[in-house]
Length: 335
Image 1 (spheres, rainbow, N blue to C red):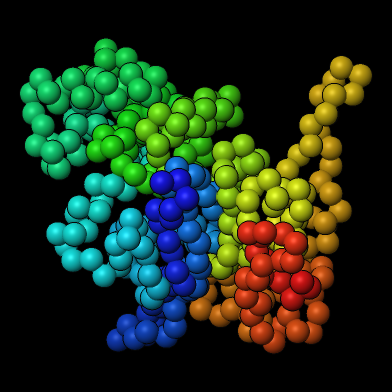
Image 2 (tube, rainbow, N blue to C red; image 1 turned 45 degrees about the horizontal axis):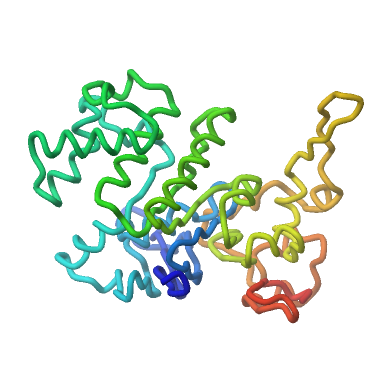
């Protein structure tokens, strides 16, 4: 049912050890994901947004255990993924698919389209011969390609077509959850809308649930039902997409939104408005120690925040629901 949570992530942490010295002893940890929680209802889309290096991709890889999580729980379809044994994990991965950001790197250049899309069908369902070819041809049609492409190699396709091949491969086993990691970042702007519309159509047709990872808030506004904004391994604000765009609360969210160029028509010419003043108030483009084991004692955004106060440097604010804003949470001492 649509009201049930298909995926629940609770206090997920993924730390990477820093090795130093001749004996390669652990001197600290990179806190790539530092205690995040969110949930996705079946049939809906959660947009996970943040700048490069904030830990978005690590979240995706931790959910399906491509990267070992340090702590926390991941509940998929009422099953704890992180504690599942090897056999159970194999079954779970049939229901969770990943669309990679670097689509060219994820497609084997020595394999044909038939082999790329058909491999999960061979491994998990034992399909071969005519049955396999018919299934691959059907998947190609679903993503806007033709069966004539079945014996071609990845280098014979454009970037947008390669992304469609990656989507077809993700749909091969009829998953319940699709994790899309920056699916439009490697294609031209003119192709992005086509890919997004395709993903929307496939969601409606196959009742898919998406975890949509991106740095582009403009894309998320169109695509997601619910948005979580991530900064330095933590979620700083989350809520329904319409509410978050109408009333952004965290200074980092406001900064991201103010950085989106505003296009308007003036005397029949398209011009781009300058970024809002909020952007200029934020100090520095990045914190130098973002990928080190050293982090601020209080709010991670504190050193850059135009609203910072003494309390911001003493204690980390937790996500709290804002009064009169159902489902809208923010981690900021101002509120």
